[in-house]
Image (cartoon, rainbow, N blue to C red; front, side, top):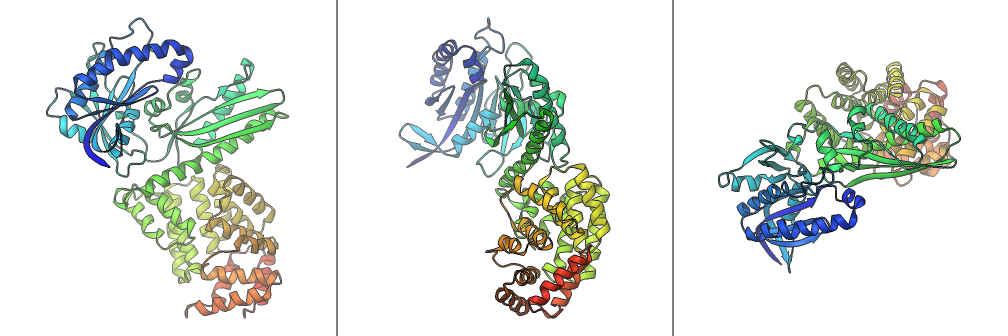
Length: 580
């Protein structure tokens, strides 16, 4: 396997699919002439070679990075003189990316990060422009008479470290300078950012436009209720109505990381709605779903589909963002990313001690990071039973953190639901009720609101409401983790569905000490006394000297709003053989 350092040029045609849709034969002929008359001659003149052609794109290799940049500039300047008789939307335009890096050579083909970065830079470039990496800039800045535009660091897909990106200012004879980079003006927000494009009406019936536009508008409105998202307003999104924009162009023009697009097709008394979430920079699909519904009540269908999409999209964004965060070092994280990583730890291993320093680092990075305070409040409350922490000190810390979180963000539904759970665990039932009621009122479509609503309503004694919320979050997030399994267990226990409670915890490895006692109570209530006794002995074996079953039961009963639930917990513990 041969490796070498090389300059890589990647180029593709902007809006190629749209051009082909309008004139397939003509577009292919024009592309062939472009390659033969402009692109190939310039690559040869600058001592490069075309590695491969890929439909509307190409990959070229140069022994000199200076020659690669000069070739890119000559090609883009030459493009301005071609096809003057055509309108801008029908002309062929190129995007070009140039990188200098290590490549792997196999026969006539090349691979490796050096190639991948060049391809990603090309995707970041505006139509008619060039993006280069910081490595290229360092080598050519003093050697070519060009003006460069600093576009900042970008996280490139499948590349661990961010890449410094520059654009090249081109004098194309039409303006003083055609700059790459509306992206240089529109910096990405520090939280997931998203634009919802107008859904396409596939019904062939202009009368359905109101229905299609209504769905788009409602999705924008629902997503805007998620305070963790930056959502582009309706007017900007609808500027693309009736067009077929390149998603990467949309991302740059609106300054967003993600785009939602979709379509609506109505046939007889049925409607099919498709939606997909796309990462703007790469064009990769993150999530897609199809909804088929009867049109008995058109507005009920519209509301249902909007809720489905508005619930699914934020969760997918968190998954995508977390995957990126996991590849980065702690030193490079923002406050939002520290919280994201800490919450992931906490929910995968409920009560994780390792999550605490991440929340503290989030606050150090941003003293107004309300969600970090909320998670810390939740952790301190949970530590009373999970880690046998001194109860009064944990209560003091829980209330202190909760007050700070609410002072900074009094209307964030996720923060309110986290705080509802925290207040519940320290026995402050009225604040817990107020927080969860407000969270549900502000945004009932967030999966975290659903999870905490299920748990809080169960302990407050409204079992039917708890089961309703449990069904909702399982519909939207069927992959259970430690937090949702514990909620399932508690809801089923207080619904007196003990066999169901046991089913959801089957196979749980290494439960925390308070869960061992609770599981014993469930087995005892289900009549499985041998398993209950084994769990009781396990609890007694590992219980710290400064903690006891009396401590655990006392704290747990404080969470019950109804005497009925206090009684069934006490009954379960006693049947399991605990002396309480």
